[in-house]
Amino acid sequence: MKRNLAILLVLFFCIPSFGQIRNRLGVNNEVYLRYANGRIRQYDASNLVLADSIYEFGEYKKDSRYKMLALSLELPARYVLHDSLRMRAIVSELKSMAGYNRQMTEFYFVTMYDWCNLLLMSGNVSDAMLEARDMSSRASQSGNSLGQMYAHRIIGLIQSYRTNSELSVRNYRKAAEYCIQAREEQELPGIYIMIARELIKLKRFDEVSRYLEMAEEYQDFYPSLKVRVLITKAYLYEAQGNVESFRDCYQALVQNPLYTVQTDADTRRLMEICWLRSSGSYSRAIGKADSLSKERDVYEQKSELYSLQGNFRLAYENLSGLMASKDSIYIAVQNEDMAILDAELNNAELRLQAHRLKSQQEIYILFGFFFVFILVTVAMVFSISNLNMTLDNLRVRNMAELEQRNAFRKAIDAKELENDMKTRVLQNSQMK
Image 1: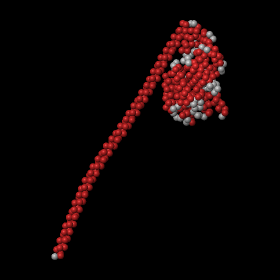
Image 2 (image 1 turned 180 degrees about the horizontal axis):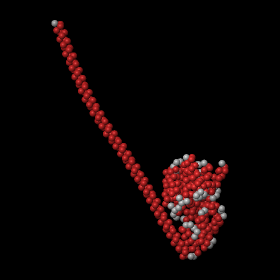
Image 3 (image 1 turned 90 degrees about the horizontal axis):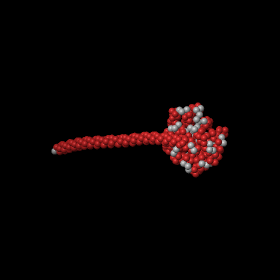
Image 4 (image 1 turned 120 degrees about the vertical axis):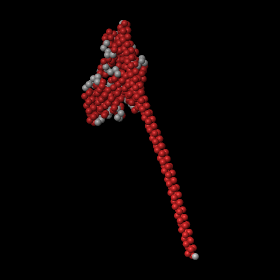
């Protein structure tokens, strides 16, 4: 048991996104450790075999929790294989399972956060936004703070991608509030770092320092957090023009063994470009800039470097390329907004149609009740009328019978009187 706990802790601290590796579904330790090991290499296609085995185990146990675990493990592996059809089928199945119990609902939100990240990475920004808003709506309906935290976190990330730092910060702060409500404080340092990086873009440096200090309070619990804090400080010092502090920060980074493991190639290249620029090695920095994967980053870095070299013609050419790139992003954002608006209008139209149908059904039900009431009322009136007619007929019949009885009694009385008279006449004649 102690050995399993030790492995669990090691796995927990190795995962960049802390909350995703937690055993939220309450499955048994053996299966969970296999899943956690798969999460470490989550973008590895070999996870498909592991995911299949966990899914089969869930079918054998007739337990949907294991199936959900397996599907969440399969999702990033399918992303690497560019299997978008299977990815959407996985998400559809996950959504069908989400409402079974509270554990599955919470794990669903964690997995949907991964799905939105994958959508962003593949350039499907409008789909990511729609999924994030759906997460927020589901979380609001169920009163789930964890779901709201993940929804606003991904919306903040989307706004950052769209270079809208104000909206990004606003959503990250909401995510932090919901994080505290959900008692998921282990997620807070990551959110604080995200806020700090957006504030650097807005040049609100005093606020950056405050959020970095709050993030650093968690370093004793999450040692791997130190790399992310150092990178953010490097961005801060570079934006402030504090060359000495930047160089010290960069040296601390490259000496940290986790730096290469926990960062992507572009982040390391950007850090190296900043280092070369601080050293005055502009030509080497320009060569390094050409290896960046995003065209916008290439233009941005080269325009600044050529400007520092005094080569204003090439600086202007790269600045023009940067502006064109930003324009294309702006157009893409507008198109995404229109797509989102269309989808929301379609959803609103569907809701309106559903409301109209419901209203029509209510009217039909009321009309039905009214029609039945009229029928019952008419039937009652008709029945009462028939009853009255029957009673009148009975009264007439009774009166006729009563009159017949009275006539018969009178006839009997007259006969008796006649007999009495005859008896008296007979008696008088005998006496004579």
